[in-house]
Amino acid sequence: MTTDDQNQQFNNSSDFLETFKQLQHGEKTAEKLEKMLDQLEGKLDDLLSATNTVEAPSDSPVSSVKSQSDERKQGQ
Image 1 (cartoon, rainbow, N blue to C red):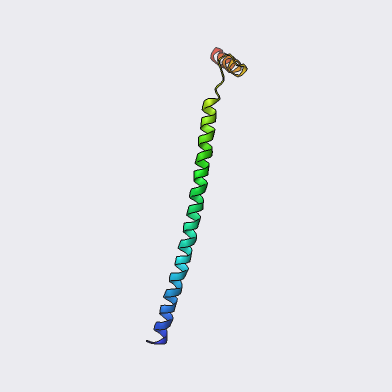
Image 2 (image 1 turned 90 degrees about the horizontal axis):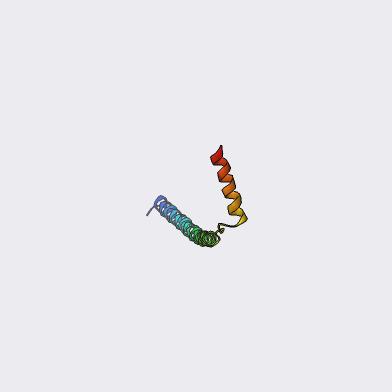
């Protein structure tokens, strides 16, 4: 085996190790992103359930103002 062959094998091994390190880093990043997305999904579910449980009754001031606003728009 010549020196050039040995250098080529070393370079290939070095490239392989660098690629493997990058792959590991990418996998860790993907795991972090997946965890963050799961947390975001949980927060969105909480917000959706909160908005579904908080409905203004028809005699509430908010409902009254909204219906008056709707009546004005229809009258124009």
